[in-house]
Length: 470
Image (cartoon, rainbow, N blue to C red; front, side, top):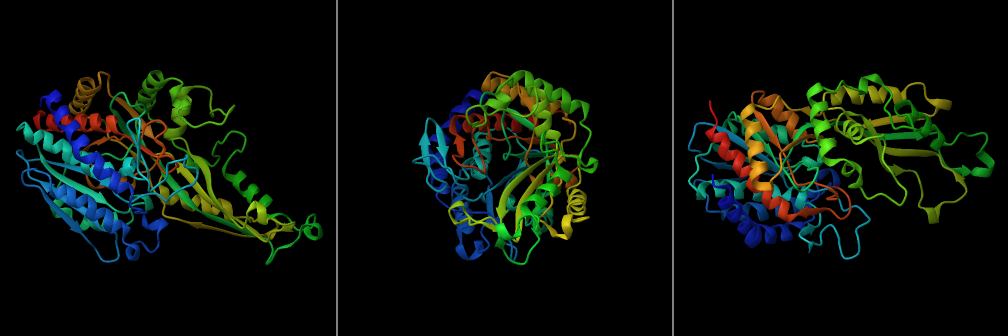
């Protein structure tokens, strides 16, 4: 493949078509079912499906078939096939459902209000992960324009990823004959350490999440009458969290929630730490004087990629500040998100967390931990020499810098599913979620120039996949 020619073609597609399509996609509040219980009635996920599928059907790609597949009671899925010139299959993955609005957007920006500033498309879902279908077909089209041999391509664009992909396994089973046995899986839903080279994700953390509810009274009581006799439910919940986490360091305490770090992953992350240096932590929106955990870039990367970590993502039983009276509240609830090392089983970890939190309740309080869908992480198989060579070549030709291997702190449930289903497949997990792109948070953006260059890099790898030695 002539990379320069492909880059020009792909850049035209992004400039003339894809960007405008993504602007309209951002306007669609296609929140994942976990955040919109009436998603089917509201119709926004269907609207996103129709918007993306229409553009896909319009592409001049030889043999392209675009189907919207629907299983009863589940979010729809876009399934695409492109016949190949060699006897092999590549599976490309993305999703179209979105995280909820979140507060804190800067003036003039909003989740459903697309704005382009300095080459960045702001708004919910463009980077996570609406661009994936467009970039995948743009890469395939660039191959066909040059008559480059390629494998058969299968594209899966799901509508439930932000809810844990619980709708996906039935679709994978339903479509198994049409999917076949891919030798390469490409996922465009991951991160980048900067916008200057190709980043390949080697691991993903899992998650044990749920709601912890502590009740000590049946109704609120005047704090002057009750405090000193009735323990605060907030203090009790703090005690319970300390069973999981050292509040001074953030270290997760139970051994069942930890894992050994493979030597290869340490070596890869050491190279990333040397490449990024202080950028490992300066990418975050710190308050004045704020600073990171751990003492050096490598330790911080190891923490994020292979360490367990607890976040409190929501609270119940707490009135707003302007409505808070002098009342000892009857109970407190916290939404917990516990990230797990890639090789820790999510279901087993969730059971461990539930047992630790609910056992031996302080002061006889009523304690309940209600788990949400657990997710097991993913650790990539060893990278085949041909794939490493293809990635290094693509990154060098497109960006002028080497490709880098790095784990991600988030979870893509699809990867664990595919890893189990296709244990012999190689994986190219990459994406546009670089510094300050802030997926799931306010001011999420898609770095448009990087997305275009990444599309070219993916096209180069797909060409080399077909040309590799058997």
